[in-house]
Image (cartoon, rainbow, N blue to C red; front, side, top):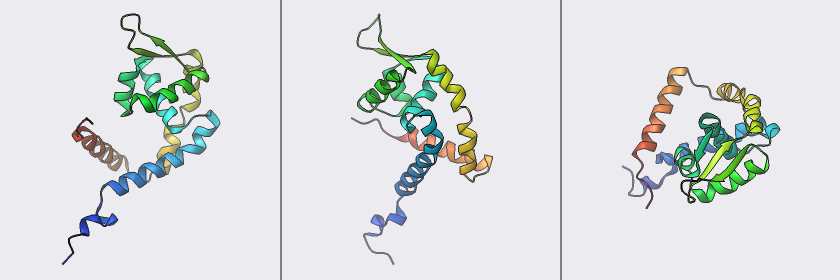
Amino acid sequence: MGDKFDCLRISNQLCFPLYACSKEIVKRYKPYLDPLDLTYTQYITMMVVWEEKEITVKALGDKLFLDSGTLTPVLKKLEQKGYVKRVRSKDDERNLIITLTKEGEGLKKQASEIPAKMGQCVKLSSEESAQLYNLLYKVLGCMEPEA
């Protein structure tokens, strides 16, 4: 019979393997992102910008589950590198629009092999990968927005 503190054992926490996997996967990206001079957060930001071509900071933050305080320095750095432009919306000055540049589009070709290389690091079948993907997004979908 377990004691009343079994709930605090790390082996009983769902959050720990999620945290550890996330940290390890991000670490595995590093050798592929270093030649592109991108951090993981910059890379996932660029993935959304590559897909959208133009997006507000708010919409970008919603897609990446990042707040503007985290996103602002990332976007400033990407703009300094010439991959994106940040422009105030003409319709509403409060909205900052992120636009992909020609250099940013060129980076996409350089990054195109990264997903396949990362796929080799994770030893899951395509069915297991799909199941994990669906479960993780189910968890994300159940999360209450922060107050």
